[in-house]
Image (tube, rainbow, N blue to C red; front, top):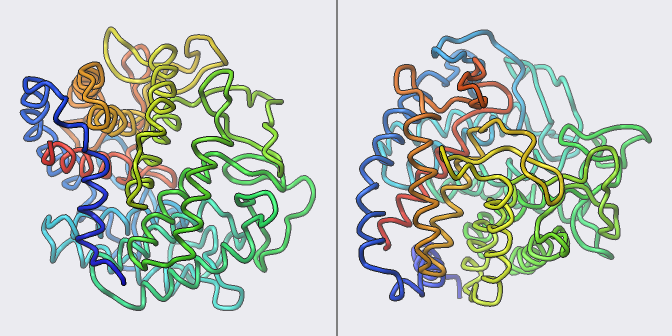
Length: 430
């Protein structure tokens, strides 16, 4: 029997939040007191920046070239990753009950652009990039990373609107990924293909890294969230099996056991690729992995208890090497077993750290995670957020300066919008 969507959500919340009885009441009270600040940041700094500024009324989709003062700087090509992420954001806001009519209309604008302009009618799947009008394809490659965000957006749009066309397109895309991108023998998904889903030529490189035939932790991380979203939308038994596989990959195959930290690039048999500067840890991805894995396990209506020790150790590694215990915030990346050497504080890393810390508090009741959430939030709300012009700074450098970009092909409102929405729901459930 197919569970109603509300039941799936309640099951997930119950599975994640079971240890709450052990949390100190004063920690819970202090965390819940922060909810108005998070809500203000979401409504004023994030949604207030992206809506309606990003809506491309002339051509469809979203305009994502905005400087640090909020001025539009051009009309660049439209990439599937950022276009899909904005569909997801507006749909998720609508499903959360926030300005539903406006957010549904904003999401519908993006959905139509994905379906009518970015979908390949001959071979299926989304093109990587089209021109600003969507009438000319500028990169027809099929990249699993980008396709994953397409699946994420379509699934969330269906959940927010009930539009069966979105679910049908999501199912077509899911089937293509399983048929062409998945490795049925050694598990996981290859990264990129030609337009007709053939292997790329030797020497080609993915937009997100790795040689032909590589499997990427980062891509599997986003497949984890997109397949979980598709499963919640469709209740597909096949998607449930694939979600189990992705949990195993993200909590085992990509974890370097001697570190209890993850690396990004792997060969077909999951041997890590550590050459050419790849022997590094991205703290934001590891922290994101914790909460997305926990969320996927909850979506499967299973217990996170067997994985909590792993989550603790992944968090501990990032805290030891990448978290600024003095000022707050999380650095970008660093070499194995050494302090961070890329010390910019990037917006999406802070966003994932917030959800990870709060998820760990919910799973364990350990006050240390409450403190990490509070410390990171103070950094975000006072240093990363631009209260004068809106949105979060793309990155804040060690000297306090920032990159003069608020939106481009790789920056939109997904990471921080998602973090604030999820954290508000977690706080509400405490």
